[in-house]
Amino acid sequence: MSNDLRAWLDAFVHEQHFLARYPYYAHLLASVQPVLDPSVPLMGASLHTTPGHGPRYYLHVNIDALLREPQYLRGILLHEVHHIALGHLAHPKFFGAAHKDLMQIAQETSANEHIVEPLPEPIVWQHYEKFGLRAGQSTLERYQLLCDARAEGREPKPQREGKQVDEHDWMNGPPPPGGVTETREVIQQTQQSGLEDAERARQAPKEQAQRAQRIAGHTPEQLLAQLGGTHDVREVELDWRGAMRTFVAHQRAPAHTWARPSRRFPTRIGIVPGRSYTHRPVLRPSLIVAIDTSLSMSERELTEVSLQLQPLSELAQLWVVECDVAIARSYPFQGRLDHVKGRGGTDLRPVFAPEVLRAHRADGVIYFTDGEGPYPVEQPALPVLWILTKPGSFPCPWGTRAKLDLRR
Image 1 (cartoon, rainbow, N blue to C red):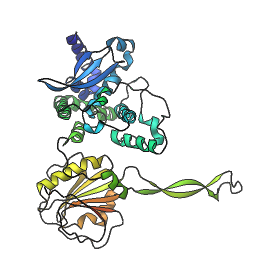
Image 2 (cartoon, rainbow, N blue to C red):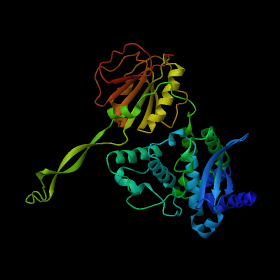
Image 3 (cartoon, rainbow, N blue to C red):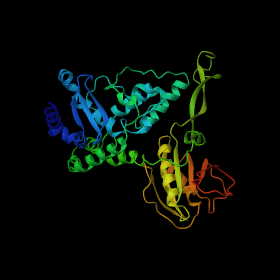
Image 4 (cartoon, rainbow, N blue to C red):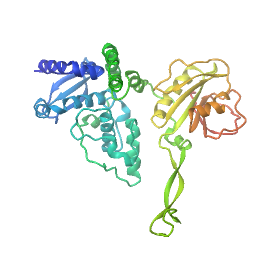
């Protein structure tokens, strides 16, 4: 019977219309073992380790239920692929959440976000807009916003009702050993085997072509970057959430007040409030992460910097600037650092040039350096956090500082 189910699934996902719209999905599902499971409402995914074979993904299918609601088959297949590709079943960061119900909501909104096929009353991020959920946020960003709302006494009740497309049984225990590696291998295999079909999809209309090049709104390269480096442990634990308080940007926003009359209705004092402007925090600041790539920065230090940027990227948008005596290159952080450019002397000043700060419209600067180089005399107008990788004095009189001491 399992062979029949495999043949049925292969025939469905390699049907011409599905393959043209979702080429990577078809190849990812080829790496997943389908099993008949009448205990699931319609479909579900799991990751199990079997003796001698390591971890493997399984697709649980309730055939009888799907035959009664065949209009949801395509959408639910995409939903399960999204859970797998986003690492929900494998990555340690999704396990052990203090508020399991809120993590389930965050995972469902992320798994459903880029699905245009019919789903049975799905939970989507638009249901939670009043709590700060927006398009394009990561699962952990959404979880934190929901947690913040609960801490403030605003229980995250949806604006419109929805229900989980599947059960999240994987959250009941620890992540399977080797699960992240298996997920990376599945995505890498998908990328290689689906490349030809994805290239053909470029000939489709623009919106369809863009969708065909992605899984859950991400290219395979982006998904791999998000899963990168998870087996390496940071040597130094920095409180990045606490550090973010330094970089919370503020913008002027209108607020109602009874302290002044309304300009439109000046005679209706006490009935119609006036309006003043206040400052409110930007939820996800945009930061320049400057990295001292001079020869005095060791490979060990640069590796640790890369590991520190992974949790930081969940809290802020990062633009990496590599600099020794001059800026070598700059780029958005995609989950890891590769081979950095530079390896000459040290000059900390180029990153703070007004044209550089204006170009990135940053809310702050985090600078990883050993501190051995000239710094700007004038303090910039935005907050700066120096992360010092070596012991010793750093004479710069401005900015906040923290230590990334790797001595053992």
